[in-house]
Length: 285
Image (tube, rainbow, N blue to C red; front, side):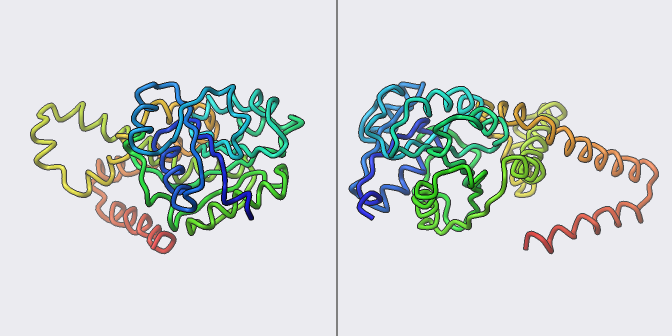
């Protein structure tokens, strides 16, 4: 449709996800026009220079945007979205790309313009942040979760799905509570483990040069997520606290089991522990 070809897109938060989203949309049509909003003047300057956005704007100046993409920390989405929906025009679509959903859902559940919002979580990212971290080939062949789909306007939902499908993303629908439970298991705990491992090594290994010399691919792949942005992840853990604490409890239990087997020199139990972990291959490979 014509509507899809000539779109004015406001990117609120011109960092890794917002910037990558803009790059991909530019690929779809050079008729798209990008408006950038960000708390950081440096980020906006950089995003202009990189061609992520065409102009800089303020939040209260988005009346001519067809699509508004919220790519900011999730606590800021919760604060911003109800007010944004109160000032929205009927044709406008707002989406977010947040890693936790329940608090957002609660904040707008009874809003008269709830239907203008589509809750999305494209499950792609890197450990880097800021506009220079944005990638032109982001999202391809990854999963995108659409949350609480029945609460969004069907036509607006179709536009958003079309965008993600063009990037060869697999679309999965679930409600916000389910989403937060599953992401606690697969994404949030991975980040916590990585932060803990980095802090463990930095605490125990005071010779920075040795870390650098000996950091093989195993360490690098496990600790990669520890480079992630604290601004983004602190509110995610806070908002998904209940699920994160539950999975953390099990994770600590698993570490203690391993510690017990090792203290007792129980090589058979250590062997079995690794065998049972290997079952993850069936799921992931």
